[in-house]
Length: 207
Image 1 (cartoon, rainbow, N blue to C red):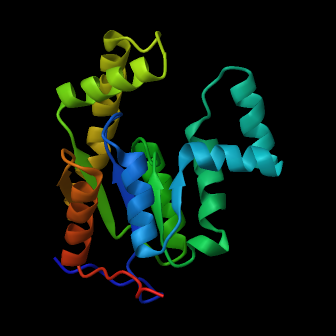
Image 2: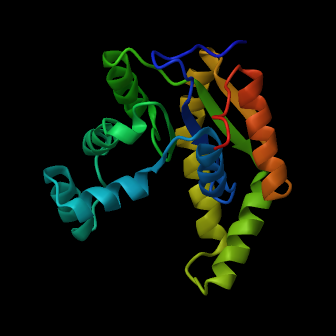
Image 3: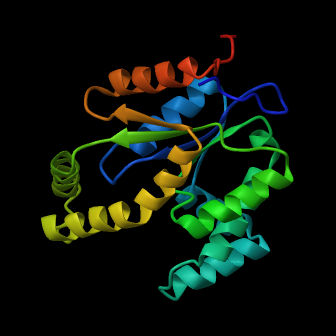
């Protein structure tokens, strides 16, 4: 399948998906840097909006301070605001959004309104046992005694339950690349870049 070019002539609107412990945060940053686009994670977007003191940021801050979850509607509004910023005009890599079907619909509507669409979805495939082992090790290293194997397994179950329908939507569109998430950081990055280049996506020339 050949990657569809965007209106800018560059096909670089990406989503990276993977369970906790898959390394998607690290890989997302590496891939975004390789293709010269911003890596946009939900957590960073929330923190940025709060730090900027925007109206949306103040709403997020109040919700988090109350110990509540940010709604799909507000999450989508904050992400849309971030995607509308100049540095994302020629592409972006999303990490942590969309998380469910409602957020997929919201992202579709936003991109449709701009004559755009996601170009590729990177799915990091890591066995459940490996994810649990990685997260358990990280919890030990960081002294997080509340991150028990049971708690970690529950988080993975939530991921599997909420993310599978999202991936099904994107598989139907033919834009999902499943990447083996085992190996060194460089090996995994190389696999992702190779898959994206196989779709016709090119990296910017080195300065």
